[in-house]
Length: 147
Image (cartoon, rainbow, N blue to C red; front, side):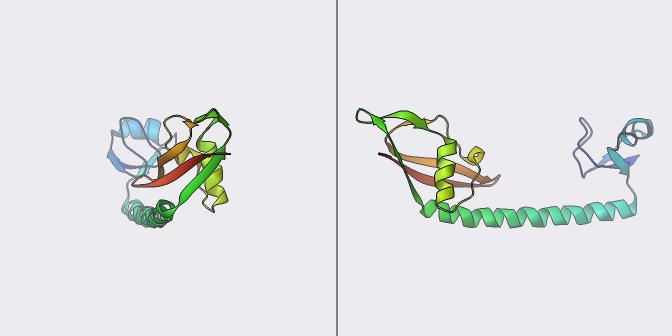
């Protein structure tokens, strides 16, 4: 029996895909738990339309991410921090601080998309990757200077 999966089902398939399962499994598990529906011609047409809409949305988000990448690549971000001695910072600069500095520049970037291996603890110039989209990563230049 062919079914259209509504939600991800382990060892069967992902949501939005067509899967071939045994009739008893579909009738006793998938249908009662609202995990799948019967693959009818109308359902398959609807599934195709939803896939096309998702692909269009994905392409639109990717295009917006590419534009943001160009703007971020041209940006040189400066954060001033208190220092202890010559180069060592009192505290550290984390993703949260970088996201706040980007927000001040007009970019709404989530702190979780800034790929910082460990907090910055010294003065200097850093190149940091920002994952804007699964296929788009921008590099920002960060200057950490003495306050």
